[in-house]
Length: 421
Image (cartoon, rainbow, N blue to C red; front, side, top):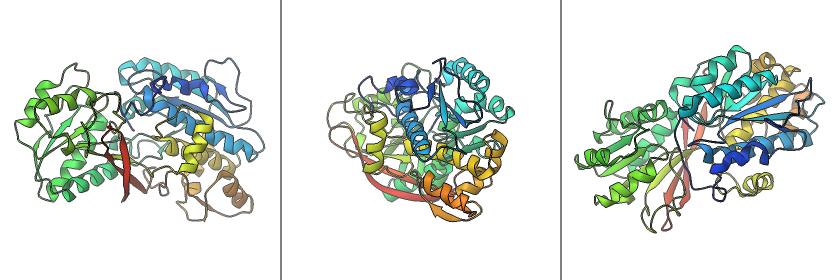
């Protein structure tokens, strides 16, 4: 998300609400891994992966699938013999959200002290922007499976992401809106790096096709920390839009009831990755029926979902699990390709193992290592379906999933849209 500072798609993880994604921190540790705070030091000399993912705060619901993705990748890597003859270990740390910046700052300090060579995370683009200078200055490779803010493209040679930037999702969402014959679009967007960068791409895309954006341009954002959004709803509806795109996180749970109470047809609502969630426990049946949302990434196969649930049986949402899995595998492959587990070696080989230089396609760590050991170049084709890293360390191509809400306010996968960044 990926993903900035406030709450994003939620509800999809029930139980301990998955919001206790905190469960992510240690609940899904794999054999040979250690959870942050466990007191067990990572093994010397081997690859040590850290995670900086939300266990607390308004983004906590995003943590479980991402942590499960990392832990499943580490299991697969170690089952295949590990990296350079040693098992990979993991240190899980909490990123919280942008309102609690001190949590991620302390977590990064802890991860550096534990000598991790790669960090998977953060989920939030704003959290990443708060800590990326410390991470990369330590020559640690940071790979996010959820960051989408355009500001992060090419930020540092040590920063990569397996989620596409908002230029891809924004274009896909804008094209969806245009294809639905919307003539007047209102946008409710929070004032946040993630929100405004995604908004800008949507506006550009729809206006180029003749759609009038009636509300939500620069200067018309709302404060994400506000406790009430009725005035914002009133303002957007006063412009009489045919449809409303909501670019926000947990604020969506307040905004949608306000739209409905004002008489707006919620089937004309468009959501994004930050709020395309299962709202079956939040709204009366039928509230969102027909509404649509977009989520970056290929829709996970049933086989991959099943393997994730073998790591965390409570999962009901799989957002960014594939991207986090691929981020971990790519870091391990880069270490194998460079014959070293230090951050600089991993950084130098990340693009190559992703396929930036060409090479034989392989779909698993085991198969890719076999090719590397035979002296061949590789193109890792992972679970997320993204293309090789480009010059800005973004995926060169990616899929955006389009989802539609059902009568019970859960969402159903409809199709994938391919895009290039």
